[in-house]
Length: 194
Image (cartoon, rainbow, N blue to C red; front, side):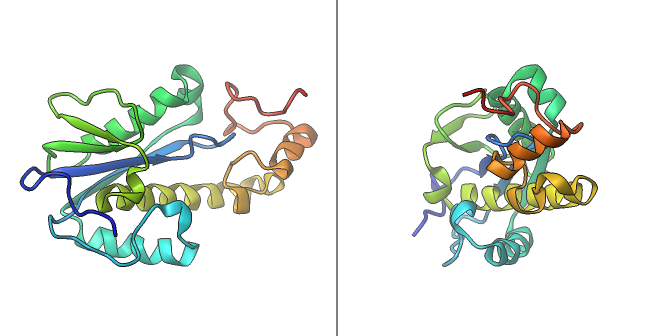
C-alpha cells in the first residue's frame, strides 16, 4: 500500500512526468495535492495500470484532489533545452498553475531543479510509494496519451494511437519511410545507426 503523506502537517504536492523517452510529442507533468488521509486500493504508478483503470482514476483524482494541474513542454523546447530540463520545466509549469500552494514538493526520481521558495524531496520510484506522486503520474499519462491519440488522426502512419510516440520498431520504420513530422524531437536518435 502506498503512503498518503511524507510529513504529518505540510501541504504536499506529488509531481511526476511522462513522455521522456518518446521520439515525438511533448513531455507532460502533473502536480497533485491530495487530502492527508487519502487512500485508494487501485492507485499506483500509471505504467502498471490498464487504460480503463487510468481513465477511472483520472476522474476520481480530479474530484478528490485539493489542487491539481497538468502542463506540457513541446518538442521544440525539448530540442532547445534537453529532455531532462524540459521535464523539470513541465513540473514547474504544473506547480505554477496550482490554486493551493504546496509547502513541500514530492518529486518522482532522483533529480530536480529547485522550485522557487518551496523545498522538495526526490523519491526514486515515488509513483509506487506515495499516492500524490502516483496521482500525478495518472493525470500526466492520461493527458499525454489523449493528446497523442488526437495527433495520430493527423499522422496515422506513425502508430501513435498505440505507441503514443515511444520508439517502437513500427514508429522508427515509419520515420524511415515517411520522414519526420513537426512533432518529432530532432535532438533524439530517431533512427538507430547500427
